[in-house]
Image (cartoon, rainbow, N blue to C red; front, side, top):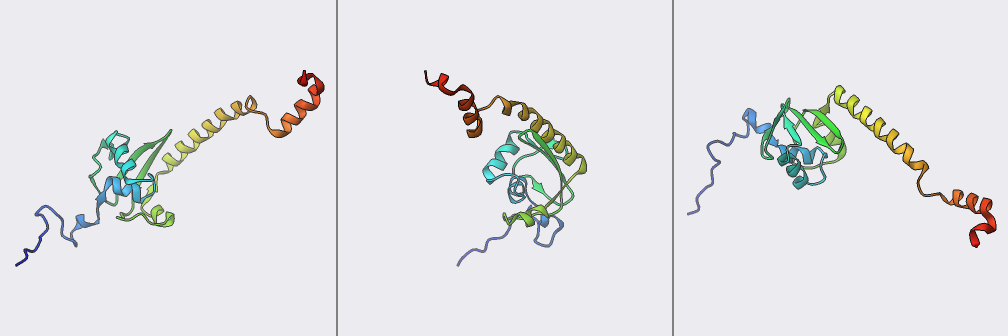
Length: 146
């Protein structure tokens, strides 16, 4: 006679309020902030992801209404969880899982503008384009061949 499996005592019932929750690393992956779940879990373990201002573990149950703050490259995102999903769907579905705060959007725009301005100065001293190369050859002419 086969034994029936029953859920652990601490597991929420399917219709309980805690049933609409998902692991933090899985949510970050499903919301398309990280390419793999392993990268999401690594970011959480390194302390780059905060839930309500405190460090969290990759398995922390995350539900609607919670605040998630994480650093991805030079940018910091502050998000409000709007929904959970156990699967990684299309980008349109992923965008419905969160709402970014206006302050976070503005801060990322300032950093992006600053980074664009920093890189603009380096382009002048970079490798010449094909047109630049032709202009240089035209000016220098035969002097370059000797």
